Image 1 (cartoon, rainbow, N blue to C red):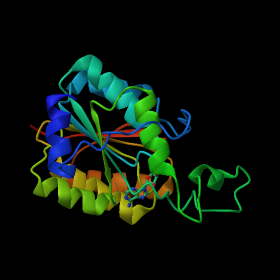
Image 2: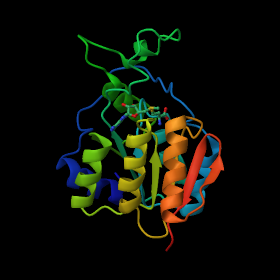
Image 3: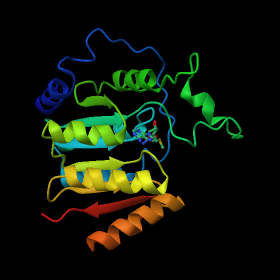
Image 4: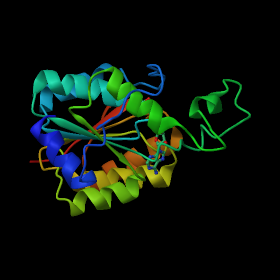
Length: 219
Ligand SMILES: C[S@@+](CC[C@H](N)C(=O)[O-])C[C@H]1O[C@@H](n2cnc3c(N)ncnc32)[C@H](O)[C@@H]1O
């Protein structure tokens, strides 16, 4: 485990959560925009020691970030925040694409965490990915209390206006000065509104690389 991951694992779990774990499910990285080139590019630019992925689903964006981070800075770690319960758009049995099947429900409870953890193990990323199975709101409190100041944050959890704006504000506060916040799904009306409102409030201009959006925190 990288030194940064060891510190995060200890601070958040007081145990190696991978100890004794073997993948329970085959590799399945179905997701959305998790391989977008902006992710690896911002990692190469920032060379983060610590990054946080907020909203990881099965782990595609987390894997892209972690693999780029390993290449840029071998001592780095990624904290992966998710309830692993899915979002309102996933809990929709009427969707023709049957996305609800992807939740992997067992007696009504999603299996996303086990898929995520299995994927991390299949990809050999246990040494740098530290899951935090929490709401983004609680995670921000937990991470602040533990003293984390990430260099990079990727926000891709809820897509409704209020929770997106809340996530941007919470993780912007956590981000170290000079750090970079990147988010997904700018075309969603709630995301677009939250990004625009945050830009107005801070006087910052977001870089839009659809569907990604980027804010750089002044040093
Ligand atoms: C669009 S998916 C993330 C996709 C992922 N980044 C990828 O690469 O495919 C959104 C995720 O955010 C999580 N989520 C939604 N609201 C959340 C919240 N308030 N706190 C934590 N996770 C949340 C859901 O469980 C879901 O896994």
